[in-house]
Image (cartoon, rainbow, N blue to C red; front, side, top):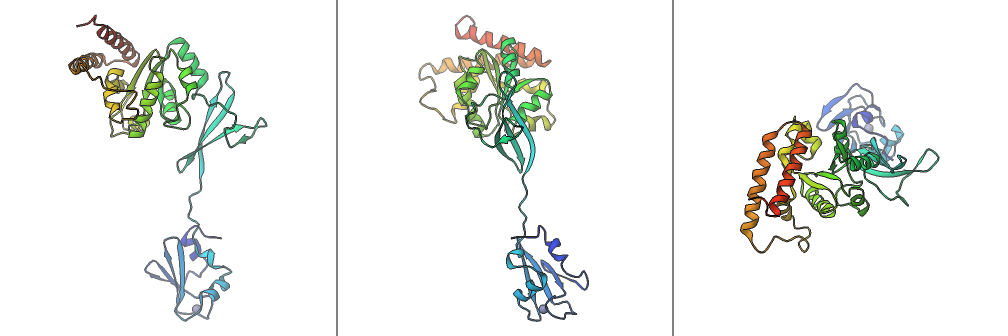
Length: 319
Ligand SMILES: [Zn+2]
C-alpha cells in the first residue's frame, strides 16, 4: 500500500538537519546506522522514492527502521475524483427520474433515486428524458425557441441567460426516439460542439427532427471555440449568435462532408446550378437577418421571416 501522497511527506520521516540537496532529492541521516554525515540518498523517480545508504545499509534494514515496507515507497498521487455538480432529470410531473453526476477530473455517472432518499448507481428501468423536461414541454406548447445543446453545462449556461435550453443525457450520439417525440412541433436551434463528433451528433439529430420540429436551425460556432460556454467565456454575447445560424438548406452540404449516413442524404445529382442559386439566395437572406442585428427576440422573428422566404423560394413563388 502506498502511504505517501507527496515526496515531501516522505522526507518528513527524516531529521530536517543535516540535509544536503542532490539531484532529484536529498542526502539525509540514515536511520539504520549511526550516521553523522548525512549518507542516505533519498530521491524521487516519477512516482517511486529511491533510498540508498552510502555506508552500505540495505534497503530492507532502512525500511525496517522507518516502519515501512517496499510498497510504501510508491507515491499515491492518483487525483481523487470529486463530485462537481449533479444534473437532475425530471419527468413531466417534475419528479426526479435520474441524475447525471459530474466529476473532476471530468467524467460522468448516472444514478436514480432508490425511493428512500438515497441513490442506485445505474439507470435500470429508467426511460431517459430530455433535460429540464417539464419546462421543455411548456416551451413546445407556447412556441418558445428551444436551444438544444450538447451537454447539461451548456444548457444550464443558456438558462442562466434567460433562454430555454435542453440536452439529451449521456452526450453525443445518444439520441433516442422519445426525445424526438418531445420536440414534435417545437422551434429548435441546435448548438452542437464544434468538433467532428459534435457535428455527427448534430446531423443525427437533424435527421431525427426534420419534418417533426416546427423549425430547425443549427448554430455553427467557429472552430476556434469548443462549445457555447467557451464561446461566451471568450467575451462573445448572445446578440452576435445569429451570425452563426445555419438554416437547413445551408448546413446540409457542410455536414454532409462528415459522411455519416451517405445512403440516406445525397447531394442532388441533377440541377447543380439550381442548388448553387439556392445557396446564394440563402446567403442573401441571411445577410438580411444580420442586418437586423438587434435583440435576440427580434432575431428569432427574423429567422421565422427567413424560413418563410425560403419556403416561398422552394415553392417557386420568389424569384
Ligand atoms: Zn546507513
